[in-house]
Image (cartoon, rainbow over the protein chains, first blue to last red):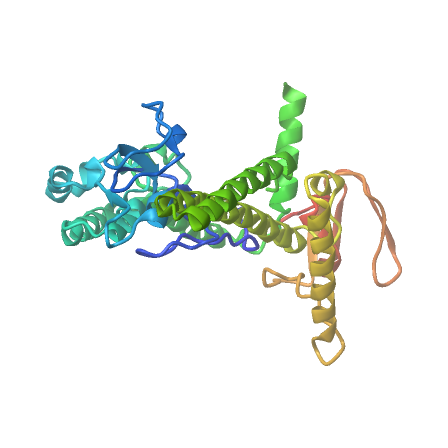
Length: 211
Length: 177
């Protein structure tokens, strides 16, 4: 909705998720490689590679972030969470070398979000991961901001396709600002418009007629 | 803007939650009666799933309410049939109550005189505006008693506050020179 009336719950900042944010719910659906540190009786059916009745201790599997966060305890009796490749030293070096070149959509699409959430699992590399996230963001931000403020009335898919979801949101925000300013300059800002509900319904009716 | 209410999907999630809860009840009883503390990790896991489902459902319903609330501001106090069809009975009821709250708030403004704050969302530049009619809408009466016939493609110079609602509903188009 391109108007000012619908305000969805935004994603949380840093290590906090917003309970009602749809973006955070999608983010926490991402899977992480884990190793069970205890057995999970009667849940063998969750682990498709074997027919066991229980999940034994020491099983390597992938669990979604929400489940990993829910089960993880600092005392380590339950789960140990491994780092996805993108947050390991190898990739971190690539990012710090040239952050602008990387396709963060392919690496993510929630590179910053998932990276921030991973800090919950007490990896010894936490401070390096946090640094890498920050430096990558700083390195790429300038370009995202520039392009969002200069791409007017054109196809932006090439600019946007390598951005992670946080960067995409920033880009969209920049574009909204640019478009609003341009429309104000043209004197269109005071024009009353139909509600998007009506415009979308009209578009759908046209599409129906054309098929 | 507002998709069809997923009644079936919701029912499936609730059924799954019931099944998880029952399994956990059984395991908790067994753990307590037979000292099977090894069952606790599995109980915790099922509990996480219950919390997850609860979160997803709550966020879904809440997001829909945010959209429905926006409709009151964007479109008006009477929703078209095709939108109402997409809403659950409880949502329709919620909309009615929200409308009422908003109306009584607006009535209380200006020392009891009332103020329609859903109008003039963009600061007005003039009292009268030029509009073009996009579809036949019949007769339309303005303050001084004159009756205007809103026929498709006719253009009129009308008081802004009378037109705002019809523009939002797509009946009139604001013509800016």
